[in-house]
Image 1: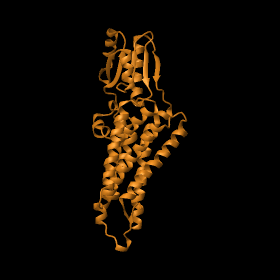
Image 2 (image 1 turned 120 degrees about the vertical axis):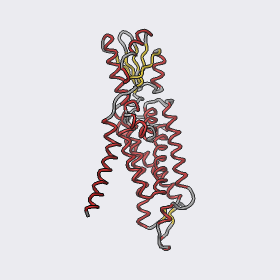
Image 3 (image 1 turned 90 degrees about the vertical axis):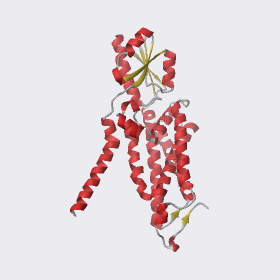
Image 4 (image 1 turned 180 degrees about the vertical axis):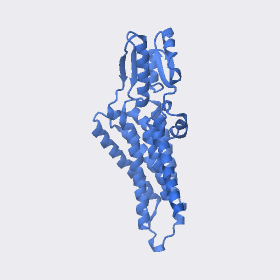
Length: 324
C-alpha cells in the first residue's frame, strides 16, 4: 500500500509539473526581448530615438510609408512617426500582447521628446475582435477532440470497430458543426465581426485539420492519445496568445515555435481585421492544410490500427462501422 501511495503522489506531482510548465510558467517568465518597432522621421533624430530601449526593443529606422507597410505586414508591432506632435501608430490586426508592449514603449519615447503623442490605430479591433481568434482556435481543438473521443468511447462500449468512412465522416462533421458554433459566438460577441467565406473557410480548415490529427492519433493509440492531445489544449491560452518576443527563450523554442494554435489564431486575426494579404494567413493555410492531409492519411490508411488488432472481440460482436 505504501508503494501505491507513493506512486499516486508521484503521478500528482508530475501532472503539476506539466501544468505549471505549459500554463503559468509561460506567463510568469514573460518579458520583452527584441520587440520589433519602427521609427520614422528626420534620420538624425530617428537614430537617436532608436538608440534607446536596450535589448527590449528592436528598432527599424525608415520612412513613414515603409513603416506603415511593415505594420500592415505585421513585421513590426508599432510605429513612432516623429513630428509636432509625434504619432504612435498601431494595428488591430497585430497580436494584442505585442501591440500593448510596443504602444507603451513608443508612447514613453515620444513623451521624452516633448509631450504626449497622438494615437492612431489601423484596423481597429473591438474587445471581441481581439479575443475571437484565439478563442476560435481553442474551441475548434476542444470541440473536435470531444467528438473524436466520443466516437472512440461509443465504439469501445458497443464492441464495434471504427471504419475509415466513419472516421472521415466524424472529421468532416466536427469541422462543420464547430465552424457553426464559432460563427454563432462571433455573431453573439460582436455583430460587426465579418462572417464571410474567407473567415468561415479558415475556421473550417482549422477545425477539420485539428479533428483529422486527433482522429489519426486516436486510431493509432486509442485513449492513450489523450495523454498528448489533452495537454496540447493548455498551450493555447498560455503560449499561442503571446508573441515570441515576450516569451522566455525556452518556451519560444519548445512550445511556441510549433504549436498549431498560433497559426490558426494569427491567420484568423488578420482575416477578421481585413488584412487577408498578411503573411500569417498564407502560412496558416499551408500549415493547417498540411496537418489536414497528414491526419487524413492516417485516418484513411487501409488496415486496422495496432490497438484494434490487439483487442480481441468475439466474432459475433465485431461490427464494422462505415459509410455505405
